[in-house]
Structures are given as structure tokens and as C-alpha cells.
Length: 129
Image (tube, rainbow, N blue to C red):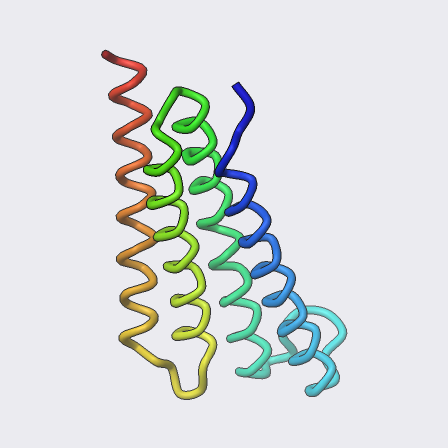
């Protein structure tokens, strides 16, 4: 069974990651830092926002794809995929802003962790039952 919904969220999240990567390049260029963070807070922040995306997106997409392949209804894949994607965008916005927009960061993590937890439980339930 081909994936019908997961590729949409993989594409959107890849675009988010590219955007965050460009923010790192912009910060490094502005502060004349070639490698690492150069001790510049703005570079560190941009790198952490990008890294946070890189830390959460792979497991979320793997779980989403597995759930879809196991027969999760496409509408539910879209609901969870949209919540996960919104969570990643909200978190990146809230964490990356100066000053931070704490409610966006917090809601971003709520959506992210909730989506991952639901997908994990759905995959476990499908495997066990």
C-alpha cells in the first residue's frame, strides 16, 4: 500500500528544516562565524532551533509512515501529521524569536509530544493486537 498522506508532511517538514538551516547560515554570516557558534548567542540560538527540528522530525515521520502503512485511516494520519507539523512550526517560531514567544514554544512541544506519543501507542497496539 503506497503512502498517501505522510509524504505531504515529510515535504513540509523538509521545507521547515531548510528554512531553519538558512537561518543558521544567516546568523553565521552576520557574525562572521565559519565553524561552530563562535561564542555568539544568535548563532547558538539558530543552531539549537535547527537541531531541535532535526531531533524530533525523524522519529515523528517514521512513526507516521509506519502507522499509515499499517492501515491507519488517512484522515487520522492527516490529523496527527498536521498537528505534528504545526507543533514543529510553532516551536521553531517560539524558540527562534527574540525574545522567545514562550506560549508558541510550549504549544509546539505539546503538539509534537502528543503526536509522537499517539503514533507510538498506535504502532505498538497494531503490533501487539
